[in-house]
Amino acid sequence: MIPINPKSGIPLWEQIRDGLKNQIMLGVWSPGEQLPSVRSLATDLGINPNTIARAFSELEREGLCYSVAGRGCFVEDNLEVIKMKRKNEALERLDEILKELKNADVPKETVISKIEELYKEGEN
Amino acid sequence: MIPINPKSGIPLWEQIRDGLKNQIMLGVWSPGEQLPSVRSLATDLGINPNTIARAFSELEREGLCYSVAGRGCFVEDNLEVIKMKRKNEALERLDEILKELKNADVPKETVISKIEELYKEGEN
DNA sequence: TAAGTGTACTAAGTCAATTAATACACTTAG
DNA sequence: CTAAGTGTATTAATTGACTTAGTACACTTA
Image 1 (tube, rainbow over the protein chains, first blue to last red):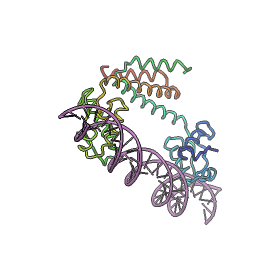
Image 2: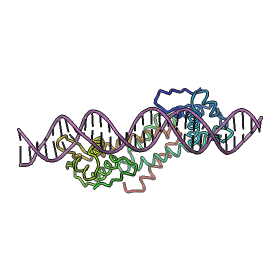
Image 3: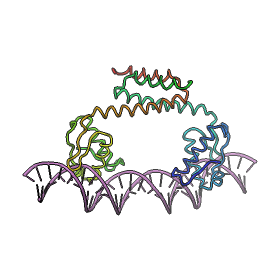
Image 4: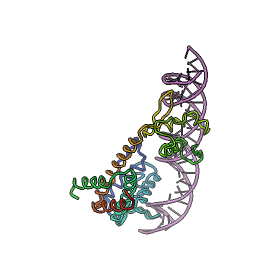
């Protein structure tokens, strides 16, 4: 069951999206497995089916699942693809920041030392 | 004269803020120099003085100028301080991205090669 | 065919943001 | 001291976006 707090100020569809995302990432639902239907979740949580559908739609946009009209919503078969996509997005943002730092005359060595420092902390 | 487009969807105060920011960065107004007054800009552009004041307030928050009640709004004397602040903000964002990349198992070498590549392009 | 699925369209309600009207407080030239 | 100029605070109206729900539609499959 996904935790819902209507008074939190956070939109219901976001709470549902994040709850499902967590479950998917934790492996509660296996790749390719069908997620609970829009209507069953709606009745379980006592809210409108469209709100669930919105959450599904966002998850699909993020690549975590795919919906088929008349059949249901299924967990993405290959979660590695998603991780790869996120990696690439992060690398693009890195490019942006680096350009900005270069324009601000931050020397290359400063940036590199930041990296060395961070990667030293863990075991990666 | 600052370009204004009321139909653009971008708030007037943001357009004014960005226009003034550009002029300051380009040196149209010298450090310490008094900017046009809230009311003169308001009548020039045909909008409410409060909208101009909002733009000024934001510029002050960003450190590009400072307002004195009864006297006027003046360009910050030391623009280098501002550049330094922005540099630090960019470095903080760099930290965020690096953490994310590390979590996504992006090897240190990939990140460093990105840096080498970018800094090779220009003359910095 | 019937029951289940996702989806599209519309509308109501809420809430935040923008903008303006107005009055206030301060500084300074005269 | 006063008047004209400055920025600022408060309030309100309006607009617009967002969330959510109601309802109907289109598709799939047992």
